[in-house]
Structures are given as C-alpha cells and as structure tokens.
Image (tube, rainbow, N blue to C red; front, side, top):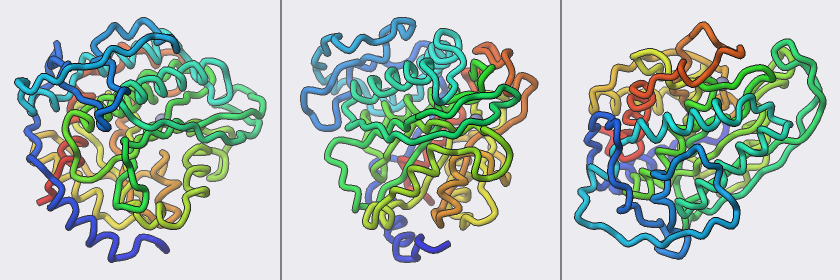
Length: 349
Ligand SMILES: [Zn+2]
C-alpha cells in the first residue's frame, strides 16, 4: 500500500462523477447483437474498420486485409450500441479455445492468439503494443515446459494521456499446457474485447487501458512462478503512469455459473470491489463478494494498487483438455460484461 495515495482516489471519484455521460442501462444480452456500424474509431482517424467484429470470427484476420472506413450511423441509439453482445463474445471463445486451442505462454499458438487480439484492438482504433518478457522453464500443471519468451498485448485509447487518471482492465490470454482454456481464460479475453468495443461506442467515465496478459498460469509453486506478464507490467510502470492508475480489474474465468464473483485480495482497499458490487446492483446482475489472489490483479495489489477480480467460479474441467467452448455460457459472459460496463461507464453512486 505505498503508491495509491488518497488524492488519486478522490480524483477518481470526481472524474467518475464528472466524466460519466449516461448511466448504464444494462440491457439483456442479445443473441444477435446490435448493429455495429455505428462504432466510430476513438480517434476519428483511418483506423476505423471492423464493425468488424460482426465478421465471422472463424477466419483469422490477415495482416493485409484492407480496413473499410465506417460511416457513422447516428440513428442507432447509444444504448443499443453499448449493449454487450454475448454472441460476439462466444464467437471469440470458440476462436481462441476451439480453433487455436491450448495457448502455452511461450508457444506458437499463444503467439497466434496474441496477433488475433492485437489486430482486434487495432481495428477498433486502439494504440497497441507488445510488452515482451522472459518466462522460466518449469512445470505447467504436470507438463514439463522449457523457458521462453511471452508478451502482453497493451491497448490504449487514441489520444490517451497516461498521466491522467485511468483504469486497467486485464485478462490473461495464456493457458496451461494441456487445456484449450475456454473458461480459463478465453472467457475473460472475450469479455475484454467486447468491453473494448463498447468503450469506443461510448466514452467511459475514465479512460481504460486494455491488457491481454501473457503467462499468468503457473510454472511451479510459489508466488514468483505465476502471473509473469502482470508482474512484468507492474515492474515497468513509470512515475506519472503509476500515480494515475486508479484501479485494475482482472477478468478471469467469467463464463461459468449464474452469479458473478467480485473478488479482491487481502491488501487492496475494498473501494473497487464495492464500486463493482454497486454497479452490479444498478444493472440487476447477481454478484457475490469474495477474496482471491489467484489472478493478475494480485500483481497490482502487491504493488499497492486498488484492484478487483471478476470471476473464479469453480468447474470440473479446470486446467484440463475438457475446458472447451461448451463449458462457457454466453449468458454469464453477458452478466460479467454488463457489470463491468456499468462500472466503467459510472457514475458510481
Ligand atoms: Zn485463469
């Protein structure tokens, strides 16, 4: 608890109140999804493309695919544009876990998944970069694995000023060696991508940096042998950016069950957890408070940031070859997404 100073928190409250445009509506998940032609690029530049996400996800994007400029469709109401699209999220779960499969953080499938996620953020107009780091050899849930490199995919909104108050939303993209990782954690990445789309369709109460983390999964026991990507990210956070980071929320295993776990660890002030629980109540999403240190929020929490984790409901196929897309329930992805979006769009009452 060194760096999250009280002034940052009060600034957060002020910005949340001032910055929120419209309260979240929390509409139900639509199986077909809204017309996304209305999603503008945040920078209004030439990066717009990809209403994109409506295109079939079964086709991996090619780097030379031309981007079609979007024409704004102001007639589509904001509440429709900012409706969480459960079908789109499920398509991402199928792409990552069904098509690409197990994504060991240092392997080729992980790199392929990383390129897919990067491309999606870019198509939405984000500034995207990779953070590369070393991962030691070890044991991936019973499978000996070699040392290698992995990377985080960091997406910032166009025009983002890291010295201004902002939040980080993260989801780990890697899996243990044998698991396709539909629930753990294609579910979290799918919700992350959908929230990134919503944050372009309507400005959230505070800028959001979206991060797909590499190498969250353990390579042995002990607190140093997991969460490699988020630990690396926190270590290289510099002064102004560090002071301006108001909250971090990890989306990890968010597609099983009917209640959304809203966890925090033992060190974080409960502010973010309380805000998320209030947001859940505003949009009628069943949620339950819990304590948990088993995801990337823990790296931030140990460094003194205010954090929370959404997800963690236990399920039989955890870290096994059976963690396939059928394990994931689109309705639960939508509950998690609606809750997170209600929090991001504020105001926090
Ligand atoms: Zn996980």
